[in-house]
Length: 382
Picture (cartoon, rainbow, N blue to C red):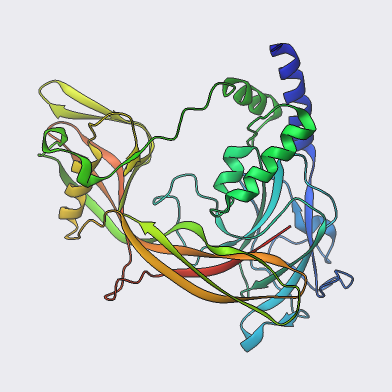
């Protein structure tokens, strides 16, 4: 029998554990995690390589920064580009949670292509104690975070849905209750969890520009005050399958077809006047392409207006194949990912009425041969 009181108590007790528990990925120079990198540091380090230098105190969507990391005594990566560092996780993550390390996107900016993206490319995602491999750029900008619950861990899984499914199963086993936990105060997170305890709607189909009929469009939208172009990272996406190195040396091939599209986002919920005493409200986040049950959208018209204003072309539902090879040290498990590069413009738009700011249109950067620009990475899992 359902009991709101019992559910609330269970949620609060669990969230207290999530909110107060600090986790550490401590750097080592060897695959057994026996030799600490005593000269390892970052911009915010206190004197000496103490455990507290690497304490992760913020969960998704936040992150604990480790700026300008330096590991002088660590093994140089092949070719001398960066360092090979092993990270020790001493404790199991809380039930339903994973702990991650990220490296800043080479594209610099993020969040316009896919609102709610994590701060950087994940390179370690773990819920079990272990010694985890990384290859880092010199003076890399790193961030540590953790996710709890299906929604947040889906945002952090780089498209590997086996990770958040496993966490969901473990959480159900441990607590008997599935919850969504986010950052913030314990009370605020508990209130949010309770408010989300309702049936999950089926995933809605994505409407593309080609599926919108002429009657649904707002033909007189105009873009003004364009700023750009500037570069943004797309979503980190798994390519190929998870691999484990059981006999060194290990080199794996990875390949996958990924879908890319121009995107339009809005920084805040906005009401757009469309003339004739009519208006359309657009919620903050992705405005095109978007999931919706209705057949009417202003997103296509605004996207086209910004594209025309920037003398660019829309890319809709294009599939490209990305492929690469990657190596894993003996005993490690991981998978390859690709993060596409987008070129973006921000603008103010009017559609027969008021001029609204906060619109950002981004196009995937395709080469002449239809290949796509972006970065390959490897995520080590445990």
